[in-house]
Image 1 (spheres, rainbow, N blue to C red):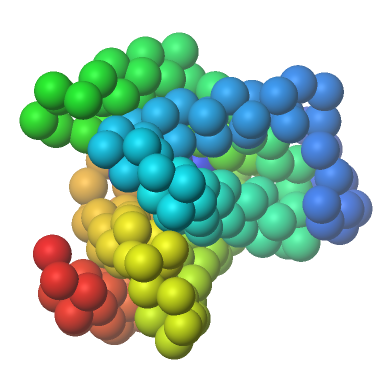
Image 2: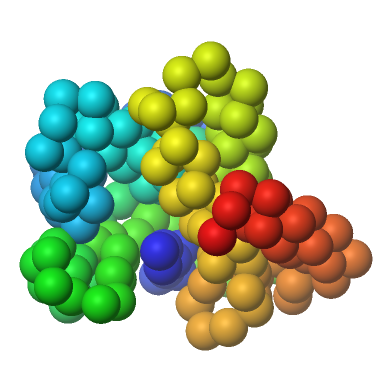
Length: 199
């Protein structure tokens, strides 16, 4: 799963308003969520338990990840809004075809409006997503219903590790630019978790 925080420039910094949503944002999150659900729906969602498993995986691995980016950015005093990506959404929907061998999940991204943010700011915002996946994965591993949470555990582990790869617009690049020791510790822990959950 690829999620990015895109920076544009706007002449003001807002006060801390955590949890504020902007016009069209909830709609975009809903569309993106449904697209992610569709990617993993087959064959899991052919049963009621499987459908719940896909729902739990989509909420925890995708929705929590994006909201973590947004909330941390808002806490730091920036305007942050989730936006759909036309190309990313199309690729995500294409991945929902059962016969597709590769799944691409990148329906949108959190956009931060700021003058030249510091590396620390970008690192903290970027780290929030995969760190949330990491914590959620560990918590779900203790859940007493593995049939319902197995997919969520695997997907959260995958998202945490993949997004910490320091390439392109992935979160790992921003975390490493800010603090490479922290990045090294996080990607090492995520890699261990990735293998522990049975990929």
